[in-house]
Image 1 (cartoon, helix red, strand yellow):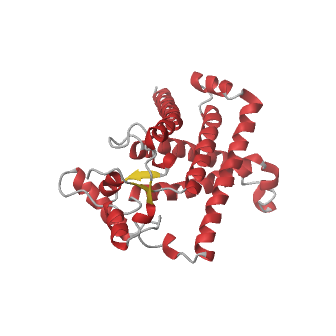
Image 2 (image 1 turned 120 degrees about the horizontal axis):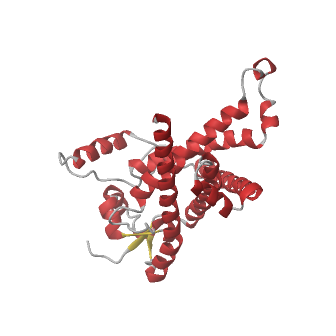
Image 3 (image 1 turned 45 degrees about the horizontal axis):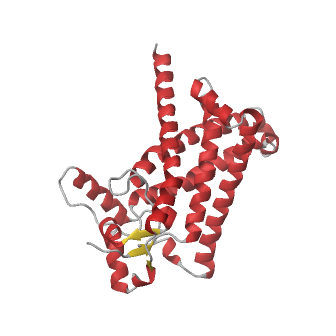
Length: 285
């Protein structure tokens, strides 16, 4: 399909929210991972780059507050959509980010397609792996927020533990373990699965510009989200989403903004993996 038509995929609000998540997530990773891998040279160097103690800790807490603000914006948006606009489609239906039976069929279809036992599934507005990433973000934010609160305010948090259990439950230590392993899981997932599904697909390399420009080409939409494209076309809603192409300037800005994050993320996950392998060999030997 040869066409110059482009359509709005992400509103300015969603792009701004995503930008907050990017900034806060990278800030948290760059100031937090050096503590997890404190025995390795790259971690010492990175911690120094981030200002060392106590500057890195201050940056970490500021980024945590930005994360809370992004979460607040998201839940405020959900509240407006459900309570004021009475939009129940965010919980169920083709526009929902929650897992539905169709997604399970698409997963099976993808497996069959991978082994050349069937055709490629046709996706709607959200692909099942995007929904899984969204739900994992919600869960991860909750875990990191609760454990982070305990680590930030250990005395106040411990006061909620009943006195008869306080001698047996070391809440800050439990929070530290949960915070650390959830951080490893989140960083590893974002810098591998999310990056490869979003930016490193052949049709998107080197950067998927949709989250920066908010636009998606008609060809890309029809190929990647055919069900969504046909649904909007049949309902007459497609024309309302038509926008001007971002042009060379928009593409350049997207790459300037996205590529540094992509490179840094891949480097960090490489250092993390190398350190974990070294630790494993140390334990074995």
